[in-house]
Length: 206
Image (cartoon, rainbow, N blue to C red; front, top):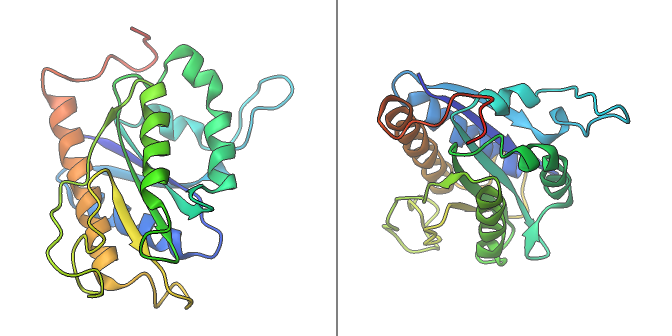
């Protein structure tokens, strides 16, 4: 069984919609166990380095999918704070050889979302994780709200939200694309843990 953690930050709820779509898709993969983890559940260690929250979910996961809005052409401040809180794990390379993937959302079709996905991929690389691409060819024009991967992203999943509540936007095509991305990561994680390329036992730094 592959364990998948979807870690996300949202401010207005639109990125949460995409995170939920990713998690829903991941849960469709045979045998996958999926946890949806907002960054608020991952507080910084205390002065005595004691940890609280749901950090153990990430440590136990075989794949971690990272997601946040794109603000000012980069990751949101809330997600960047989470990234910095992982420094103790980085120092031990505790997430080495886990699979990783990423998704982002912004108000415009571009919004420099590619830069955010690049930030997430570099973050995963610093943790010695293995990045999973979107794996979905675009099949319709960007203006079509039903189109799969309508924004033409290959590094990870992208979504675009209009000035409307999250029960309206991002559109159906973006949500469906996110589901397919989550399913892809989970299916690959299952192959990874069952195959000869399985990660080192948890807690072992190689």
